[in-house]
Picture 1: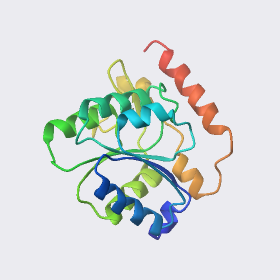
Picture 2: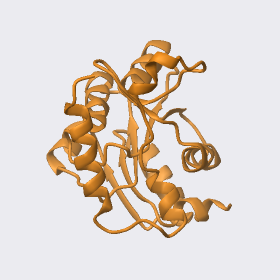
Picture 3: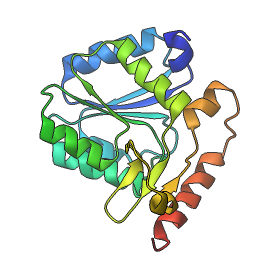
Picture 4: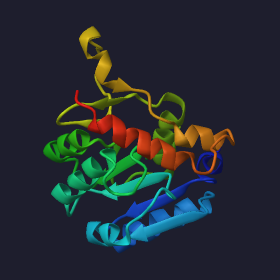
Length: 194
């Protein structure tokens, strides 16, 4: 699949405080078929915008506001922001800081991209999500993709297959209004005692 094949139908919400990096990546994304791209310069701007389910991918920088970015991703996964709780979240950072990567993963991101990265790396991660999306874990302190290598029988009740919006889009099977239904179903699951 070409880069435009993966990206051409996607609506991307890009939260990046560094203007030069944002302009370069946004330009590459548009050149490769992204038709709907919204760039925000920080977490505050994202929170004040009140985004809805219109976005398919959240690309968020963790360099400047690590704690706020982690809190935002946790809130997305718990259905508290208005964004689709299953939205693929790709975290970016320049430092490769182990503690920050751990916080990103603990928040529920799908993957981490270290800057500078090329467009093919981004596409490879998105293809991984499209074709091999992980089930989600719901526990008291974590909601997000299951990264465990070894599954334990007694924990199967905390794993949930979530809608793969990107795959449905690629296949032309994403029905309008279905995302709101998924969001409501997910919020009910989160409210059930574990």
